[in-house]
Length: 547
Image (cartoon, rainbow, N blue to C red; front, top):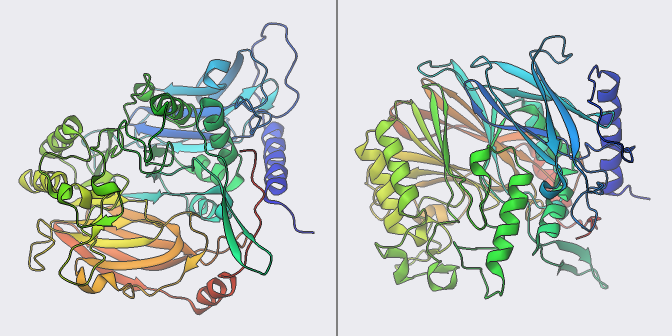
């Protein structure tokens, strides 16, 4: 009998908690008399995020039953004292910061600890304790000091993980690559379930499950994903910078407009924002206020890199011509924006003040032009920057006019690896290259995909600025130095096969002060192609939690 995904996850969580408990030296303050929590409450793991030179945010959330119907993780409706420690070593012989936070039921027993007063550019370890239970140990880093330029930064970026589409093996492999920083560019979870199964006669069918629409179900959905051991490993290995895309709330939403007419959408938006904050390692400045949440922000890694984390959902004008690939007059309307005027000004002002070698935009949707029609008619995605041409032009001009040394855009959303040169005028092949875009594939969304060649996609023929596409699942590792940014497009041959190996499908290098992509490795292992092909038609009936 095949072992279900959920039973495997529970076994892994239990063993992790046991190991953490053996090494614990923590003590918990006495709390008011109440029924003790006898089960492990750290089933959702730990995380850190938003690193600064003197500290970072630590996160955990208590849940003994992650997918309990009320969204509160099976926890009693009372507050709990949660002790935390930060040390310079994994055995916690040298604890440098510690304290007690309170996990409250009105915040789904989540904990956000802002740690300050640490040394810049250092590695630290952290853990939590509550009700006699000890969490797993997490690793994190502070950013380098202002005015310093570190030798290198290992940064990974990811997007689009759909629980029922496959194993989160890519998260596990990312953790094993041990980056210094992880960017998640959106679609961390999906607001619906899509179950693939084999119908009578052998035909593959997709079935849409119920959507997430209220606070309890958004909390429940996040907990379902967070219960995955591979995702927990990725969170525990390094600090994260997170931004959302659409599926954290609703497919293709735009500001206060849902994809389809919906009563109560603003209440749904507020619920989704609250659940997102409760489940992410975000600073208090990002705590939502009703339907608003401050998510765009800037994080500096010394003078080596500045990360401009964007929000291309909350302030955008509604997509023109009902989404999809269209020849749409609204796409070129100069008044339309994907960022909103205030965020656009904030971004361009940041370019003007930047002294970084690398200015990196962490954002959600395809930035470069992507025409899907070979003929004279231009058909582009209204949900991407192609639907907001003037907005893209203003921001591109902004970094060019500011003489940004190296501009790199990082993107998720499209469930495939891509790479592109960035141009002021995409319709003119001789237009100067003024930056580069790197797009990561999904962790699982869409299932296995296929191992296509680096330049096999037909759209590359009439979009000469597009340099690479591959439809396997995975993530991107980058190594950023003073002289170059090297991007490894990491892929797994199958997400339906548990613990698949990872390999670098292609590598691109961007040289300092020389915008544009240089292909430095193209690796299509025969074994990986064979495995991908052999599993392309297999169907796994994933056991999904309550929905």
